[in-house]
Amino acid sequence: MTIYIPAKQGYGEYEDRGSRFLAWVFHCPSEEVFTQRLYELQGEHPKGRHHCWAYKTGDVYRFNDDGEPTGTAGRPMLQVLDGNDISDVAVICVRYWGGTKLGTGGLARAYSAATRLAVEDAGLLEGLQRMEFDVELPFDLMGLRSELEAKCTSIQFSGKFTARGWRGCISLDAGTDANVFHELITHRGGGRIIVR
Image 1 (cartoon, rainbow, N blue to C red):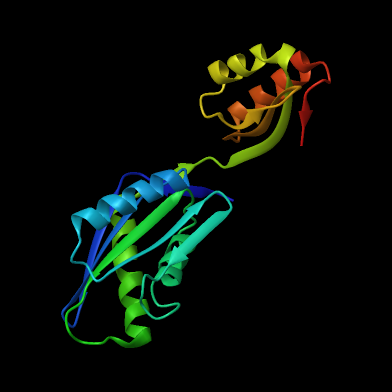
Image 2: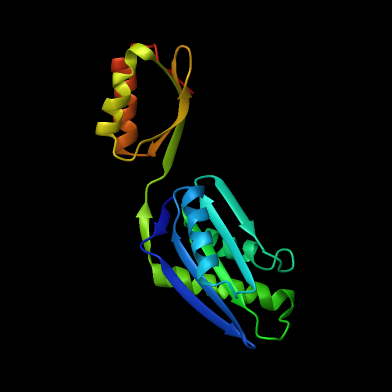
């Protein structure tokens, strides 16, 4: 299955009965990127009544209605992202209330429409899927970690040192980087590197 990522940050604005829905869609490789952008938009739009959001990073997804009725904002926004096969993406939608209640159906349509407009504005790039491995690397093979960083441009390490070496998660793009990873682990590791 082909997955896509946003080509750039996209912006969409939708209006219904005086309420304005301002949506931003952006590439989001980690929860930290999402959190930073949410704080920025909350600071830029302090008078916005709601700051609803959804994001997908790999197999992890989250959404929040920020005070709107349950299921009327975050989930419909996430469904737009899913419907476009977008991954490593986030959408944040700020609502300025116009004085008229829209009802649950109206809210879901408005948040979806603003998200759809932001996705169209962002455009999509074909993306590579990420692969994750739990790895135990002995101290005497730590040079292999530096070699992996040099040869696999997409590689990310998250873990800690233990009494025996380094243990943690390695994530990288499927394709060339994954092939280089497997080759180095197999040939240089001599069966001493544990990969799950």
